[in-house]
Image (cartoon, rainbow, N blue to C red; front, top):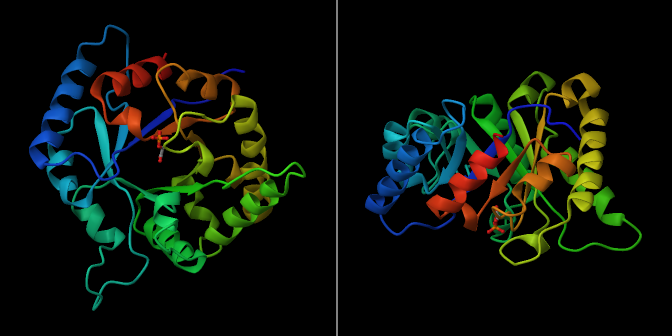
Length: 256
Ligand code: PGA
């Protein structure tokens, strides 16, 4: 299968690294090595979702990447303690956000909250990466219908003209943080289901504008197979984005 677009390579730092100093060293090292790569790479060739408190500083030093948030609040600006809303993240230097990561869902995020987060984030002009994924697979394939429902519910408050800034990351929960990724074939069938759900929501022309990513135990060894055979337009990477060498390896291989 041929590649359609410049792949989106997105790292997810989760609750790492320990200090801003370590985060700055990582970005500077990554950018320096990125600049020295012999083959032609895009000026900005990676995305990194980082803890909120690092966004401002990292986005001002990063040369070759976009810095984003790992979550947003779906509430309006105002009297809510402890919430950071999308427009604040944008003004603090974020260009994108993850929403609905399974680790955020596990902390109690409801589908209603998720729908508000996605709508507000897209209205605020952040590139918005909605994460979906099944906990386990059943032989009858019911998980596909559940994933399609999740896409439809999470996007229920979004108007179709905002779909150009929407990305969906397929992250099977059973593949996150372990040692067994999905196969490119397993990924491919879900990509088709996601596209079917998007088409039924907004029609094929708008659905086509949405990039779909794969995430879950992506490594430098398997990264390219998802783009070549899994039908995705990029990757969402946890652990392998927390190490400069493996992240750079994935970036350069996928921008081949
Ligand atoms: P992993 O995490 O690559 O470490 O499996 C992926 C994710 O949680 O986004």
